[in-house]
Image (tube, rainbow, N blue to C red):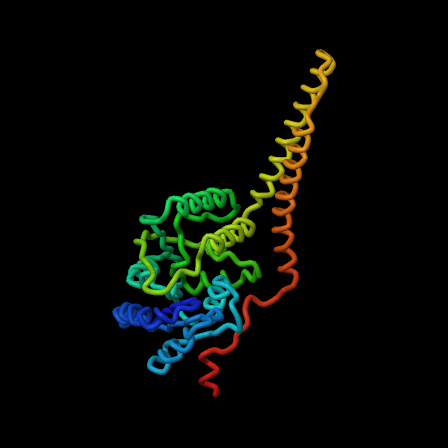
Length: 313
């Protein structure tokens, strides 16, 4: 019998852990004639009682496993730890808040059995604010220029992969991880399925505008050099405008004998150029910073405790 690993990164999700377990177990029990399962919870340094809830579940069901980080390392670290410690022939990523509906798991398995290596969900954006949708579309437009990856509009972390795909992903040992890009970069035969939006079962989202912006910048700077190219183009454009402006001033002075006033315009130009330079340096610093972090070779996460430790005790 094949095994399905259900990886569940979580951070402060004590309100939904039991409900998530019940709903997901109901789905995996329906395919128990073909697939055994393990439910691997990755606690990303939660400050509530999330890990205690998982431990209670493990007392009743030994198929529940957990890994608890020493602090909050971020969702990317949680995904990486889940993939690295999973044991299944198939692996599926699910959010603990039930925005990723487990009812699609049998459908995903069906496509895997048909010969696909990965099944990825695409979220439609019904009910989402226009501003958030616009920024999302803008992000995917920028990512279109990224080499060797193809990010579909609305693609989620909710996906199922074969063990071969998981092993390929684990070969990429970057510190600055952007999983959506990595999933696409490794390739393999992928099936996309559209799913409906689902609200959180309980609690508040950990993703605000600031964290989403940070996540987008991480993705852009991990897989494309477009920001650097844009800063170069802006520099060329400004230089061209400055050259034309200088020629106009020279012609006016020689032909018309005009004085060239412009204290205010000079100050404005200096401030404008200073702003452009600082933005360009900031973009460059983002890339240099990534190199700096990679050279440190720090681990992506540190484990405080895991379910296997209890068995040893």
